[in-house]
Length: 46
Image 1 (cartoon, rainbow, N blue to C red):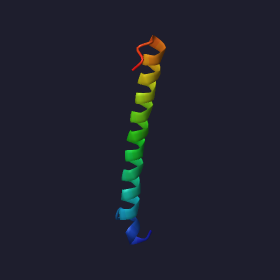
Image 2 (cartoon, one colour):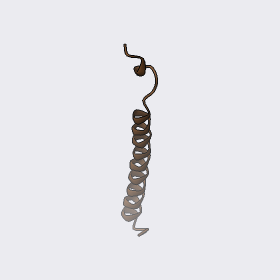
Image 3 (tube, one colour):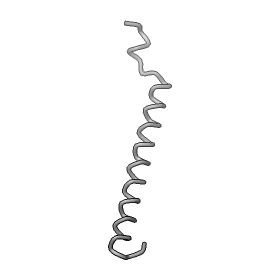
Image 4 (cartoon, rainbow, N blue to C red):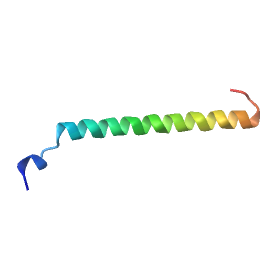
């Protein structure tokens, strides 16, 4: 196997970080939406 395969690729690391970040964002957005939906369903408004 090529040598550079052993060393983590900077681009790959960056992409993975970005992926993790967007994963967190998606999770946050999902929780926010579900909270809003629950509030609406209960009639809280918020």
